[in-house]
Length: 163
Image 1 (cartoon, rainbow, N blue to C red):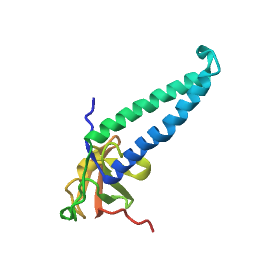
Image 2: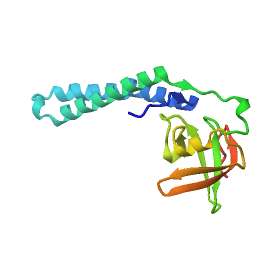
Image 3: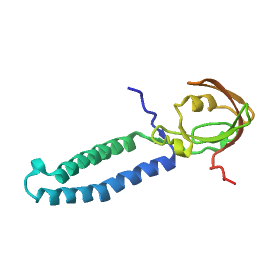
Image 4: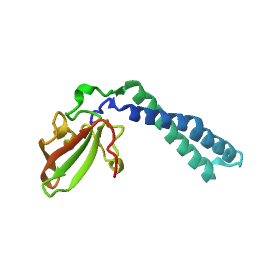
């Protein structure tokens, strides 16, 4: 099994805490109530609402257990002004390829990886190539399509503002 990084941003920790709180205080209560109501309708062996509710309750409980364990071991990486000018965990990085196409990524922990938000895992080939680099450095990343070369245009520890 792939080992999980225990590093997380402060925003990532808050998101996990919010998810845990919502599952415990809202979803679990709603599903438990629905299961109780479905059970009152008699024969459970042929009661689809009861079976589905019990299945969903198991999913919620499994996720709650996972989140509680993760929150016990994750380590928030705080921003340090000494990082300025170099790429480290939590950085937003603007890159440009040989064709002039740009991309922006944030290097985050495994719990925060989200392609929709351009949040890449610190364990990804791109993040590993970027760590420790500076503006104007060239990085080579091995991809399924072959090696890709990127140039670092900007490094920030606050989000880039979209124009």
